[in-house]
Length: 133
Ligand SMILES: [Zn+2]
Image 1 (cartoon, rainbow, N blue to C red):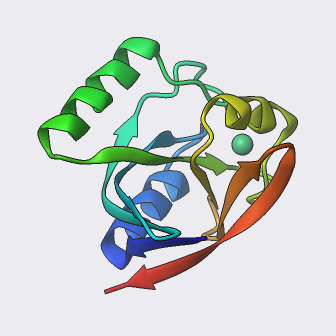
Image 2: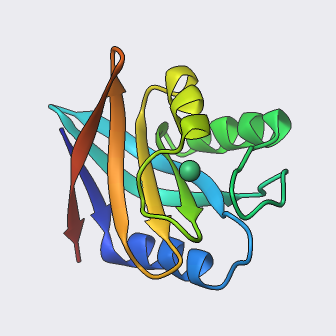
């Protein structure tokens, strides 16, 4: 599986992460096609926990994003969030979230690293990221 994301969208997320003292989060909107996840746009959301070590998105805001995606003819194809003091690999809490949201999880760090993950059954798989111009 591959995650295809435009450079400007990835840079937008990295910039959010770099400038934040709490974990930033949001959704990747786009389409799934043939083992590839194509990101068309990214949508930042609030982290309702205001925390540097975890994040949660308010259900009403999730509903809003679903609505926006539908209007654009897109789906929520992934979730992004940032890590401040640790590598871009899922935390134990992220694993629990991944069991509910079984799409691609893009994790970035405030220092500019990024990796993407997906849960297959009980197993964590890394998703190759292709950055396009
Ligand atoms: Zn995390």
